[in-house]
Length: 242
Image: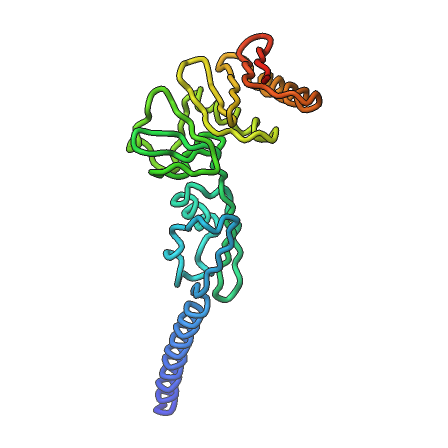
């Protein structure tokens, strides 16, 4: 009888010891996995080297097994308005690779204290004090308050959105626009070097681009040049260079 009691006690001690060892081993494995799969290297690849990326530091030392790709992408997009798409690649055990593709700014919208860089949908990509040189400046008849909008917000004024459409499609024709003036409700004026192109906010926008394309092709084939192309009317009005 005493031997049975002793055996039971010994068996209980063995079970407790094995249980404790199992818990210790489990904790060691969890700690090991946590350390091994923590993000130690973040590789950034981007198509615009001059643009800095915000929000990267928050992911350092995060566990790769626990992060969500969608949450990472959405978090970075929220703090980087110029980003169009992000491709994320996880390389185990501890590397995160991020490929950034940026929205292209197509116009400097003049404000009361600087400029907004807008994409072709009117989204503000950047607020700056000095206009970027490689894209046209848009002057609006009513100065927009610089402090009322932030990067990521959109400008939804119909005439400004039309201007963005006309700039994008005019430059696809191989014509670089220097400045854009919206000084009335119905007219958008482009300066292209010493030449002028006038668009209407009321006439079908696709028709105006088609007419402009046809006129430019005709001038090129004939070897002529123009001072002004006015697309506001049923039939475009042309002023030919001497």
